[in-house]
Structure formats: structure tokens, C-alpha cells
Image (cartoon, rainbow, N blue to C red; front, side, top):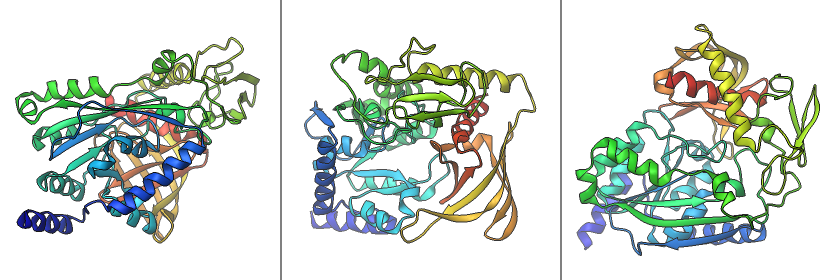
Length: 406
């Protein structure tokens, strides 16, 4: 037992992954749970397996920024290690807190050898690893695809795989929203997907299909099965203008504004309102935001397919990894271009004139903050681009997805 503990501690020190601090983890968890209670969020938890094997991998779908808390309702007592976006470790205080609770960083959709070593360290130390394989928040409350190398890692690890399936988390706190919705209900369920022996026997395609089938979700279909749920917020529509880019009446882009529960077009005037179940009112053309989003994405795809020289261009502010209490800092100004070849930034970086190129094959998906920015990692460094029209940030995500998949 002594030898095993020394080996575990030595491995964790070498790769900078810590065993979760029980006191810090419990204190942070209880504080956030109290905050959610005050905000009117109810959590219903179901554990169908008891205690997960050691070592094991626990996969969780990712609809909300606070999914780590919803997942922790079931897995916290097992002291797992969470993978978290590297962006949050640039803030020194937050980074220290995350490391204290056993989290470690990942450069999303980029080659990250440090993260790969950390993941293997957790598995070899006989611990449980929690990951959210979609690697970004859901934009519209539906399952986002998973990068192929994630399946390769799970296959290589060869340990039991469990899932924490969350429902209602996106609707409680959408990516685009201004604040948490009172009256929200979040269901969280821990179950086994494959044993270690089953993982070894599965083909890569069978593994992919099994994981996607288990984690797949559609929040609006789930809401239809819960007619009693009502969401309360004074700002139900605010933020939607940052993911809904095109007016269905005039076809203009980035002309939408929101006030409280109402959506407007700068040219057409009042469009619709969002009710207590996220449905559009006034017999609007679309039932909810997913239908609207799919319509505008189809328009964008047709535009790209019809133009072999298609390019998305914008003047941007470049922000780089920060320090102290700041996640990012000013790095320069320039122009970003996204085309079939990839993402190009031409401008300044820390006072020097540069031209940065990120291949579309390696980008996979550009991450974005709704109405804030789009971003791409290079190794352990983030390039955080703030476009002139901040409502266009979602365009960079949609275009990168369409171009990569072509």
C-alpha cells in the first residue's frame, strides 16, 4: 500500500496532476450548490452503478457552463480528476483552485502532449478520469460531435467506461443566456457503458457508435416530455442575438437585438418573444431557436458550396494568455480570414508584424464565446480573436464546421 501511494504521488507530481483536495472540493461544491438552490435550480440524481471501477473513464455530455457541478452531484465522492479548458488556468487564482480539486488543462481541438500525459497518468495511477468529449458547450441544446482522437484514447486506455448523462442543464443556463433560469430542473444519471473487457473487444466504429448513442441529447425533445417545467427569467431572450445571425423576414445578418423576452430586427421591428418554455410566440415562423439556427446554417452552407472562393473576413483584436487575475491580455490588432485552406491572422502580435496560419484540417472547430470572440489553440497557447461585429462570433464557428466537414 505504501509503495502504491508513493508511486501515485510521484506520477502526479511529475505530470502536474494532483489528487483532489477533499476539503477544497467539498467547500467549493457546497457553495455552488447553495447558489444554485437560491437561483431556483433543482437537481435530480440517479446512480445506477454504485461505485465505478478504478481506474475508469467517466464521460459526460456538455450543455452548460456549470456541468461540472451537475456531474459532481454523482461523482464528487469518488474524487475523480476533471479535464478543463486551458483558458481557465490562465487566471492564476482560478488555476490554483482547479488544480486543488484535481482538474488539469486541455487545449481544445489542438495537439496537447501535456494533456495526453496527464490523462495516462491518471489512468496508470488507478484513478477515475472525467471528461466532456464534446469539448465545447452546446450552441443549441443538442449533442455536438466528438473528435476521432478522443475515441482512440478511450480505446487505448482499455478501462471501464461510465457515463454521466445530463438533461435540462442547457435549458437551465444556455451558452448564450444572461443568467440562470429559475424553475429549472436538471436530471443527472450515472451508468456503466462498457467494461474494460468489452472495450478491448469493440472495434473503433462500435465504440464510437456506442458512446454517441449514450451521450446524444436534444434538450427541446426532453422538455416536451416534461410539460410541467416552466422557466422564469426577466431576460429570457437576451443573448439570442449572439447565436441567431439572420432575420427570417429581411434576410439581413447581425441586425437582431433582444430586450427582456422580446426579439427585434433593426430593419423589420418586432419579431417574436420567448415564452416560459423557450418557444417563440406570435405564430412565428420557427418553433424555437433550434429551428431558426438550422435554417440560417443551411443558408450559410449553400452560400459556401456555391462559392469556391468563399472567405469570412473581419478586423479583430488579438488577445493572448493572461496572468494574475486575467485570463487574457491585449496582444495586437489585425485581420482574420477563414477560407477552405484555414484561418489566417495578419496583424500585430506583441508589437511585431506577423502572419499566423491554422490549417482547416487541424482546426476541426473554432471555439466561440457567444457575442464575445472566437478562439483557436496552438499547443498550450490560445489565440483569442474579438471581431468588430461581436454578434458574428458564431459565424466563425459555423463556417469552420462546414469547411472542415467538406
